[in-house]
Length: 330
Image 1: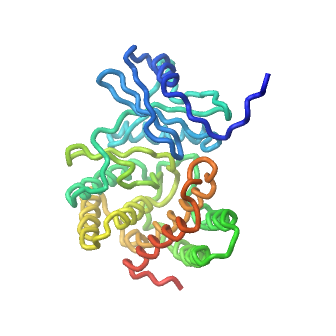
Image 2: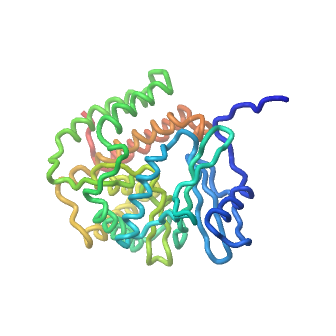
Image 3: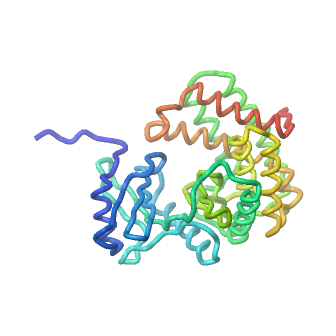
């Protein structure tokens, strides 16, 4: 008998997964399960007559069970405080995390509510205002809410990230030299922050159009808190503005939407002067981290496009932001 060949990342059968979910959560015999996206994690759409859910299967060796538990603790806290988020759903045994024995080892799965509305990068400045309001309400609940997960500091965002990027590309190219110089610059900026003036707590760290649904231009629902951790709340504000610029090539349109987003946010809570001063820099540190994550998870997700040309495009977006905000990296 031939032994099964080892694998690092398998795709679970949606039909068999649907049967498991139906059994565990007591859904009807009309339950259907289909693949939605195979990326950093694998997402499945689950429908049971009129009800719709998302089942996330974490890739092997990506998140520990305790890290996932902390993500879910944050989401349940946000749900309890009436924030607009997709939330985890417990099974009939009141368990939120399913352990699935796949070919590569144990994988964890969680069933989430389906966020109302649709996803679009082309939203109005009025919708941008609503996104700002919704994010501010989330931050009201996450300020001083500490997670037993990664803290987004200079070590994790910059030092470790640049090390991983250099190790992956293993050559001295101008883009890596730029990231090293920028990292040194950003480290000083972060070290010189007036901490008492900066709100701190749990952050989403990936707030952009791909991780929120807009329902009838009226209601915003956030999802995918996979990168949640501890950090300055303005990280989320800065990252949204960066992604807004990246998806709006017309800078006048970007400016209108950015101002509307910030106005919406400040109808709920104030962004301090120190936070506003730091906004142009925060997203640069986050993007350095995300480039390193792509390098780290190369074998699982990004091997199709992660090459020097991709790095040039990523750094090009950073440079566009730097130019727009008139940042001079010393």
